[in-house]
Structure formats: structure tokens, C-alpha cells
Amino acid sequence: MNEDYSHDELSGTTSFPDVVVKVLSAEEVSEIMKYANEQNLPVTPRGAGTGLVGASVAMEHGIMIDLSLMNRFIELDEENLTLTVEPGVLLMDLAAYVEEKNLFYPPDPGEKSATIGGNISTNAGGMRAVKYGVTRDYVRGLQVVLPRGEIVELGGKIVKNSSGYDLKDLIIGSEGTLGIVTRATLKLLPLPSKTVSLLISFPTLETAIRTVPLILKSKTVPTAIEFMEREVIIDAEAFLGKKFPDNQSDAYLLLKFDGNTSEEVEKAYESVAELCIDNGAIDALVSDTEEREKSIWNMRGVFLEAIKASTTYMDEVDIVVPRSCVNELVEYTHGLQKEVGVRIKSFGHAGDGNLHAYILKDDLPDGEWETRLSLAMEKLYAKGRELGGQVSGEHGIGFAKRPYLKEALPPEVLNIMRGIKKVFDPNNILNPHKVCEE
Figure 1 (cartoon, rainbow, N blue to C red):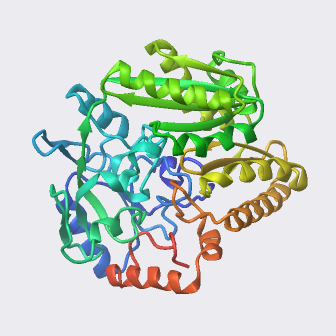
Figure 2 (cartoon, rainbow, N blue to C red):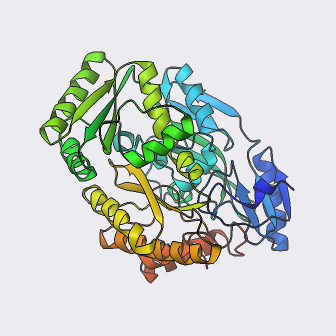
Figure 3 (cartoon, rainbow, N blue to C red):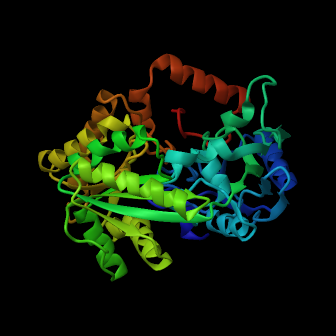
């Protein structure tokens, strides 16, 4: 069996399934689930395996259903602006497919080789969430195979629906614990004709983050607002073998604007650039050519891989806090490095308060690493709770983050989640030991 099936991209959670079945249809998934339910066999659904929290790892072995070959584009409905696809379609292929038709699928998670089924399972967000929202906002309908093998249709092409409980939205973000998505109907938008990015340098990260609420309160809403620090940019430069367009500062905001005319976009970025300069920014670099635009966002896109390449092993948190608290959380991670004795590197979505912090093992012995990692995570999640945040902004809970979810939510809420799981999956065979399950 391929060793890749024993783990995901990062979580450190390892367990082999007894058998892997590559499926081609919802009917095949249904037959497997009927058999598994009768025999009380655990089943783990899996897409591209790019997750970071162990959600697609077979903790009780059993059957793994690999959905990656279910990768067909079923229907593009230009009248209703929807696209119906199978769950194994890759995000990058989906984006390219609709852009050729002058259409636009806004969700933009950093891992473009993830499957749309995986994105739905974690309610993935990404950089464009500031203006456009997250995956849940673009799922109109789902075909789902339930744990006992029933195939159900939830939602559809309709724009509004007040017909009872919204089970579709319950499936989105459930990380494969309630049902297996075998088809999705997605909402599309017309493709914006013009995009421009703005790279703004600041003397400190605090100054940069403090400017974000002012941008969001202005009449201009950027597509994305990312923050980054020099030390992560240096890792990305080494990883790509290319220089970042600016080297005068230790802190940056990277913003993107889109619209239907050059005049509309120019007015937007000029007003935001002026606002930033008035509030302490050093400079604003307009990336108004395709080459420069690609260079900057390619650099941002490899941050995770670049940090990973700079150490022997790492683990991550993707805490989300109120936007006004991002700087306090980042500053806390800086101090935590000395307190715990590990390197921590971070970047994230300043526009929606989602911090990606990576705790690096470097040359620490395994036992010492486990102790320091556990302490760093406990302190980071405690700080997130103190600031009114939550455990995960977009990566999910899976297996690895369950203890922190238990600390973050009251018992009554966890009991409701477990009750929902029991209604969908009374024999607890579908992706056991994930999210809220013990």
C-alpha cells in the first residue's frame, strides 16, 4: 500500500487503512457504506490528502475511500451561474475551467492542489474571504452518501431555501464525519476584468495590523488583505530562489483589488494607499503588471512550503480572532518563542483575523520537542480564547486538534455536535475519532 495513505500533509497523525478503494461513482460509495455499516467497519473518506489536522487519516484502519478519481465536470449552467462537479476535481483545475468561460469561483485556499470535496469538508476559506466569503457561501447543492448507504440530494440550483433544517450547510465543514460528498453544485460569479495588488511596507507589524480596521471601515473593500513579516519572506526567497520586490521593511500588508474597469480599481487602490501612508506606512508598491502580480502572489503562496523546508518538522495552528486582535496574537507568539524555547513563524489573513502560526522542531530531540510543542500549543490556544477567538479558521479540527476544541467549546455545544453525529451515523463508522468524537 502507498505510504501516502497513512498520513496527510502535516498533522503528524499516522495510521494505515486495511484497504483502499478508489471509487468512480456515488453508487460505488453507497455499496461500500452499506457493507461497512452491516459489518460495522470504519470508513475514512479521502481526497488529495493535503489536510493539516489528520481528518483524512484512518485512525481505526478499516476501509479508506479514495475519491480522487471522481474528478469530472458534470455541468456548467451559465444561465443560473452554477457549476456541478464531482468531489475529486482539484481547486486549481476548477478555477482554470471557469475562467476560460469568463466566470469566477471566489474561494481561494492556499493549497491549490486540494480537491473541492476536501474544501467543502473543511469549509475552506483562503485569501479572498475578505470580500467574497468562504466555501459555504458558494455551495448551492450537494449529493451526499450517508453512513448507511443512502444517497441524498441537499439543496440545488436554487438561490434561497427556507424549507426546513439546512442539512447541506451541516455537511459543509463536517470533515467527512456525517456523510461523503459525491457531487457539488457551486455558485459562480462573472470574472472581474481587472485585478491589481498593492504591497504596503510598514515600520512595524503593529502599525500594519492597526491599519486594517481603517481599511475595512473605508468605502473600499479589498479582495484580500494579507500580512507578512520579513523572516517568512526570507524563507520564501530561499525556497524559490527569487527576491521579493521590496526589502525595506520588516512588516507588510499585501492587498488585492478587483473590479470591472481600470478606473474603478485604480480609485480603490489609490484611496487605500493614501489611507495607509497617512497612518504610518513607509511606501506603497502598485503591482499593475501581470509579471509583478504573479511574482508577489507566488511568493505568498509558498510560505507554508518555505517554512516547512527551513526546519526538520513543524506543527501548526490556524487560530481565528477578532480582526482587531491579530497584532496582539502575533506579538504573543513572538514572546512565546523565548518562553517555550522553540521558533514560531507566522503569517495570515489580516482581513478576517486568521493567523497561521508554525511551531518548528529544528534539532530538538523527540521527547523535548513533544513537551515544548504541547506547551506552545496550549498557550497559543489559551491566548486565542482570551481574545475571543476560535480553534480553527479554515483548516478544521480533524484528529489532531480535538483536545483544543474540547477546551474552546462548552460541554452543551459538544454534546449537541455528538448528538448530530449519532443521528447521522448511529454505528459511528464514518471517519471515527474526528472533530468532536472521543
